[in-house]
Image (tube, rainbow, N blue to C red; front, side, top):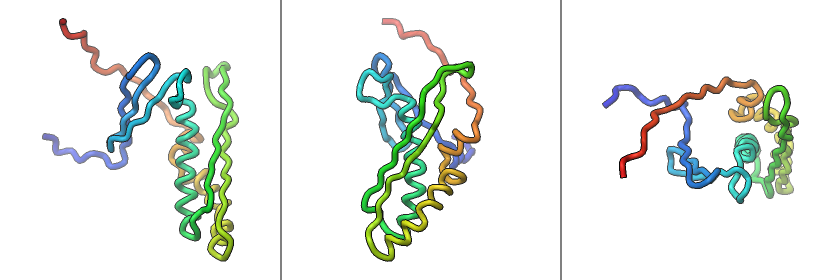
Length: 152
């Protein structure tokens, strides 16, 4: 038994192959998300990155504006262009668009008033996913334990 306390800031998922170019991501809370290469309805890794950017900012913006009024509708669109150049494959022109409607009245007016600032705060400070993409972070790769198949 380890005396080490787990790092409450550490985030992680496990990925398991479930078919040819199909995988299952599982988080520590038991949530499951299928991932594919694009030949099926599963989200591709690029789509997941766009969803993560949009979802992270949507949560930030919803929490900030929701203190004033609940949105009547709340839609977010994220897009980018996949390119291959001297830097390898990557996305350019990342853009997130918020289409949010609030109810009429004083509370809705307050929510509308803070919406631009909430989007700005998410972009510039709050959204961990978007901030990581913007500032960059090195990714290390390693090979784990490799075991031969069990004898039949």
